Length: 231
Image (cartoon, helix red, strand yellow):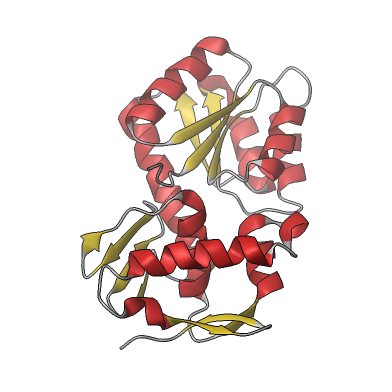
């Protein structure tokens, strides 16, 4: 079973840098998407929706700062800028335009991973107010993308995870079919209610790691679903 991993978009025009980053990010259990120029990075940030972007400012087509400006028009994805020691002014300008952090080349894997994890945690807390979301015996670690039921880890596929996450963040609220499909699968799938029914069944089955917990997801015929607040 494929479990959900945090996705890092690496934007750098140097093949060796991308390869190096790919190797140690993979070892650290991140999924890596690569881009060698700014325009491609903007497209990927919209289509892939990475959890964090590592961005070199010296790109061959457009300036890295323009990439930051464009992405910040519609997204708060954490952006860590990679700079050379001679580019302190550029780093300051990037931070002023909306970058979250910067790391100076050459950098150690340990330092970069620490910055990545710190910014992922900050991003999650900013979005939902806390790095973990709980509902009774269910606990979801939003940084590591892991689900625990009575503190036992239960594997969820990426879509199952996203679906459960949406329910947990909105626990106690009735969510329409269209709201759920748009949030988890995107606007092109707002009418795929049969698809949603299949995934709801899969999530309920996994919640049965604790007997009776699947009943926490309640359906309202023709309207949608609600996750009850569990004591």
